[in-house]
Image (cartoon, rainbow, N blue to C red; front, side, top):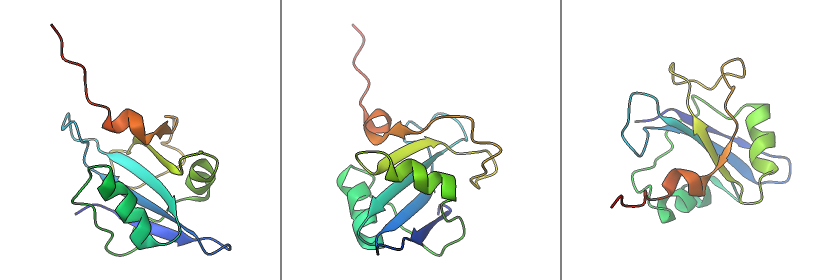
Length: 113
């Protein structure tokens, strides 16, 4: 389904990175989501509890980069996202967008009168 991977940290926790299709369905570019949790199962559960039900991690093809790990560790929620590069692989050279809190991705648009 989506490229993703994980990295186990020295303190025993993990950072999981997933490239997912855009929830809005607007265009080919998806999003890169980073989750910091006690283990991989809890990281995926955090995403599923937010409404991303069909999230699975198969393999370790696109683990988080050191910069991505730093970004998610410094965020109070431990859950961030940004637009994924077109090639589907996270690359520091292509990463010009800042990381956003997950609430901005899952926010429902307000109805227009």
